[in-house]
Length: 287
Image (cartoon, rainbow, N blue to C red; front, side, top):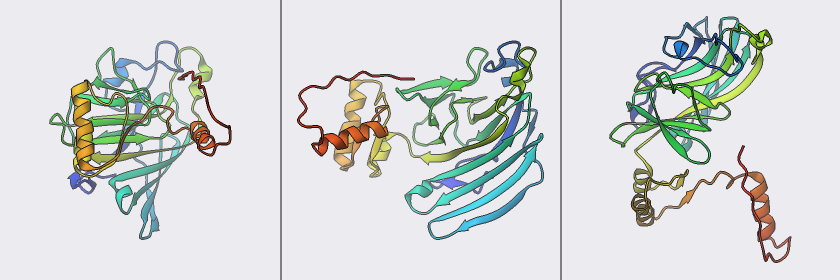
C-alpha cells in the first residue's frame, strides 16, 4: 500500500508504503514466547518483496477491492485491499491469507504513519494505556483490537485496527509494527521451530480521525469510548457537555457490553420471558 495516494480525512496517512517485514528471532530460552531487544532494535532482515500478481476483484458502487499475491522466504501471501463508499470509506481494510512456512523470524506489518508522537495508545479491553517508543525494557506491547497514534497537538491521529493480533512494537515516533506471525529459531525446544506453520486468515486496517472524542462530537459523530473516559472528572464533564450540545449519543464501551450472551439476556428481559426480576447477582471475569 503506497504512501502519497492514501488519504483519509483529506490527509496523507502514510509517509512510506506499508510492508510486510521479517525480523530475526533467536531467543536464548523459552522460544515459544520470548522476544529479545537485540532483534527489535535492528532493522528487518527482509520484506515480502517477491514477484507480485494483482487484479481488481470488486469494482462496484459500494466497494472496490484489489487482490495482491506474493511470496517471501518460502511463504505465500494473498492480500485483499478494500475501500467502501460512504462512512465505511473512512477506513481501509486488508484481508490476509498467509500460507506460512518460514522459520527463524517474526512477520510484522509495518505502518510508517504520517503522524509523530513519542507515545501511542493501546486498547486493553478494560481500558487504554499510553506506551512509549521501543526501549530495552519495553518493546513488544500487548493490545486488543486497535492501537492509536495521535499527533502531539491532539488534533489528528491514525488507528491500526485488527481482529486477532495482540502484539506490536514502535521503533520511533511515527511507525507502528503489528506482529502477525512468530516462528523463532531455537537453541532448545526444537519442536517450536515450526510453531505457526500452516494457513492463517486475519484482517487489519487503517482509520484516520480528527483529534479525540470532543472533536468527534463537534463533527456530529456518535461516540463509543473505551474506559477510561478521561483522566479526571473535569475532562469527563467536558465530554458530556460536548455530546449534549452536539445532540449525539455517547456511551462507554464496557468489555462485555456487546457480547452475544449479554445481548441475548437483555432481549429475554425486555420480552418478559424470564418473568419479573427481583435480584441480580453478577460476577465479572476477564481472560
